[in-house]
Length: 439
Image 1 (cartoon, rainbow, N blue to C red):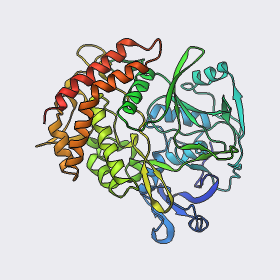
Image 2: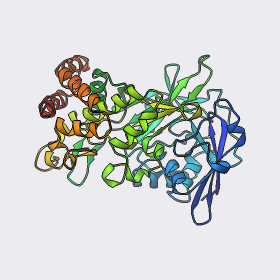
Image 3: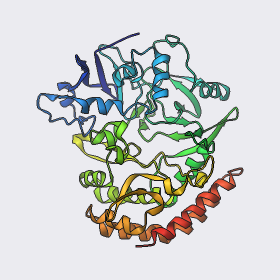
């Protein structure tokens, strides 16, 4: 198994800095002087600022940032370790082999590795059967060493089974060299937790939730339901990718999630585990390039997660685009799934009184329990972040438009869409809206 102690970090092919693992598992990141002199210079993270004395940042904050580029799920990490022959499941070892195509604009490779030009497109086209075969292998473990040096190696954060491909000139491709992926293909969740909760409709569920947020005028990741040899996936267009104006290459757009931006470990993405809460993110968005818009949309999204009974609105599921000189603004919303279809009592159901949101709202106490949250709690939460008037406006907007949104999205449903799923989510929104009207 290969083991490295120094990794080069590049942004769209340009060297940015060096990530080192020192004795005692101490991590440091140093910006290159050549990067600091470039007009497009920006930090790789708000938590790793350019003006750090000596241009070197040391400690857990470095490892936290890079670790957040990887899947949360320990089983998926172990499969990555075996597939690519990594020395361990640590962020450093995994990204030394899989960091060529990360979330955002970074490429991470062993120090001194020659990196192909990003200003070209190199890829192997796939037909439907080949895509299906690739999807079928996502959860399997090929022997280490079976992949050629220029093979398909990507790192995608999150807990769900997924892969990523390039969609170019109307065809799916495996990207080669420095060519990035453009779409994330998410497989059905299946049955989850020890209670055997049925989330086999997760592809349709997430598509529906994104449509609902879009109808509420929240910018979301574009997604469509596709089928490859009867394997259904949600194909999500990556908003951190953009084709160059001359069409000759695909650009990577710098971004990071709020765990990265605030220097938190991905293992503490939920607020009750030490992760960022609504107040933390609203405070950071005060200095966004689009502060008023971003604060409104973030608060609006959090209330919509409550309306949807979508409990995974944690800090890793909200991100920012990173611009020059440390400027930033909110990205589209992504990774939204309702549990209305599985709420209830009995085997395979989630009791409503046990459903907890990722971030707390406040009243006399802090509240995570979804079934107890009312409009009053949102008003108090907003008051404590200096945005009470904003919350009044957002709540009024959402409650007034809920039934219109349901009608709008109902008209968008494609033929064959699971009617019971849609009805369950729509009925849940209507019911929760009545509770949130209590202020």
